[in-house]
Length: 204
Length: 204
DNA sequence: TAAAAAATCTAATCTTGTTTAGATTCTAAT
DNA sequence: ATTAGAATCTAAACAAGATTAGATTTTTTA
Image (spheres, each protein chain N blue to C red):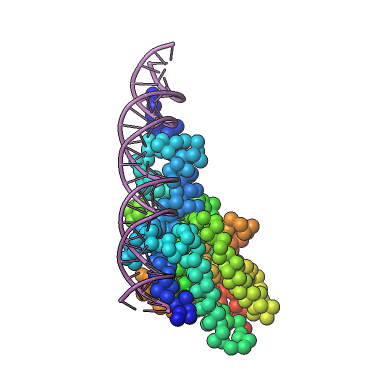
């Protein structure tokens, strides 16, 4: 007697399809990704995908949704490791490391999301908007909290700071693969840069 | 008697087509951009585009090429304003301002380039690679020079620094439009962040 | 203003991708 | 082993987009 539907072959194939779709989507964009190619890469026929997904749009929605959830989960994990009431520097480092681990380890998914932002049918994109907003809020609050604690240098606009940091991190998806640099190294470097800058200050 | 071929109506239409193509490309990606739509947006028929360009690929090549040239020109202009032998801080600020002005003022072109990086037929992309490399070298040398002058804090990896800065700047193309922030403000903020960081150091 | 050249349009061709319906092959439980 | 249901395939319908050739209109030149 079957107890758990989800552990059947179907579930496995579903993930295979999602992974294949993420890879294609990240490389060729939504409109440049063809069901035929997704199917072929896992030895299936294009038509067979419809047993698992109702349409190309539905498939893409799941990819994008998974991509944002992967990030949130890993960042949360890294931050939780810190325990109760971590200081700002530790928290920022952990969050940066988590974000980078997520987007680089699951590069297909996150590149699929980042690269296609804005060039995907609105309905597909809106699907994961709530999750994206929630994640953004985590960062917003991180910096707001830091400001309250008085550890942010005066004159720094934390709104622009957050956007700059996001840019640095997300851009890594583009050059990471052929850089030979480790994720840890990148995380360390970016945290250091955003905390202290690159300029050798003349101390008095 | 016509002296200059290039000032004919053809040249004007050419630019109209390029602008329209850049806009479409930036919004929908290479494969999601249709010649029909490009043509329609300037009241032409798809077939007519072939009088000006040999193929969709050729058209896209020119858009990408123009996008990188726009950036180089404006950055050069900003840097030249500084005169002879500017100090590192001035130079970095000018370069950042130039890059941001370029990518935000000509957002259609630069977004077309950035968003489609990697999801465009290789032949199209390779076309402008030399220009991209040259521009990257400008930044590489900027930081190498600074290191020689000893104004870079020890421990800073200028390679990763450059990539982080590029990420911050280029990412602005994504949020700038609905941010209400001025280009000058962003340039100022990013230069300040990358020079000094966000953390309030405890001075001794 | 008439002829030549430039620019655009029309309509058809060719190709390719999504989707569907029904047939076929697996798989798992009895 | 048999059978129901799951999973996949096949082949065709349908829709769109790139490209082309030739006709047509517009602009320029003399």
